Length: 62
Picture 1 (cartoon, one colour):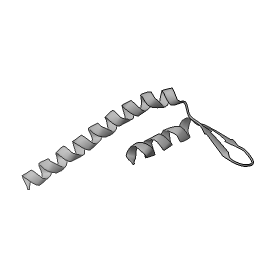
Picture 2 (cartoon, rainbow, N blue to C red; picture 1 turned 90 degrees about the vertical axis):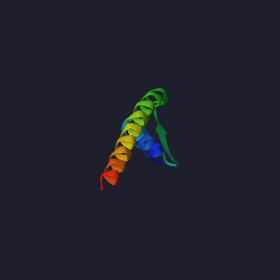
Picture 3 (spheres, rainbow, N blue to C red; picture 1 turned 60 degrees about the vertical axis):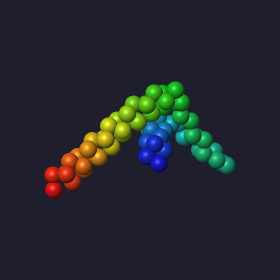
């Protein structure tokens, strides 16, 4: 779910939205997104690991 949210936020920032009479066409730069996705996933994993380790430390200390 978090990956999907990050994907949508990234696309909304870099897309070109073309309003047509029948539909909305959204275009994303896929190669750029793939590189950014890897970086974002690593950052997200690091944040989660940090939160989990701090949570366990606080539980152990109490």
